[in-house]
Image 1 (cartoon, rainbow, N blue to C red):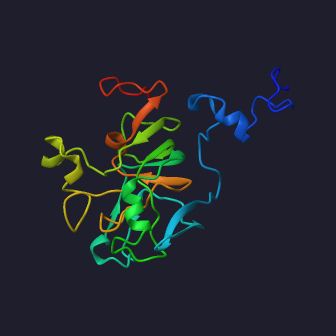
Image 2 (image 1 turned 30 degrees about the vertical axis):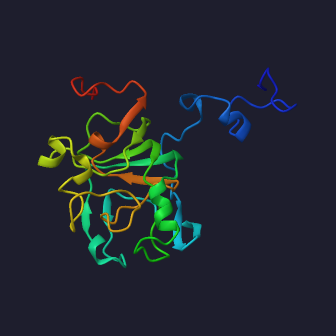
Length: 214
C-alpha cells in the first residue's frame, strides 16, 4: 500500500528505500540487511595519491586479516579473526586524520589502502568466539582496534593495545603503519574483537551478564 502521506508530491511504498524516505526515518527504523547477499560484492574509498581517492571494488571481508601484500613492511601480518564480526556499513565519517593521508602528509603509497576509521554498521556475520553480539545488531565501532584483554587495554589505554599491530603498540582501521587493517569507508568491513569493539546502539541484545538464549 502506498504511504498515506506522500513525499515530494508522490506516494511511496512503506518499504521505499529512496533518499527522501530513508533519511526521514530514524536509523533504527530503516531497512537494513540482516544478512549479506549471496556472492556479495564490496566497494571502498581507496587512497590513490595526494589529493586523490577513488571508490573501487574491494574484497568482501572475511574473518581474517591478510596484509602480507602491503607495500608498507611494518603493516604485514596474517591472522585468523574468529573473534571478529563483519558489518554492513550504515554510515561512516571523515576524520582529520584521514586528511593527513589524503593530502600526502604521510608515507602512505597510493592504490591499496581503504580509508576510514569511524564506523557504524549492522552485524551480518560473527566469528565462533564472539559473545553478546549477534546478526542484526546495529553497532558503533571505536576508531582504534583493541583486544580488550592485554595489560594496556585492562588499564584503559586501548589506543596502545599490545596485540593488534606487529610493529608497535596500537592499531586503527584504514591508517598507514597501523597494522594493515582495512578501513571502514566501505560497504562492508571486518571488525576484530567484535564483543569488545562493537557497541550496540539498539536491539534486544542482553548485557554481558545475561547471555543470549540458545
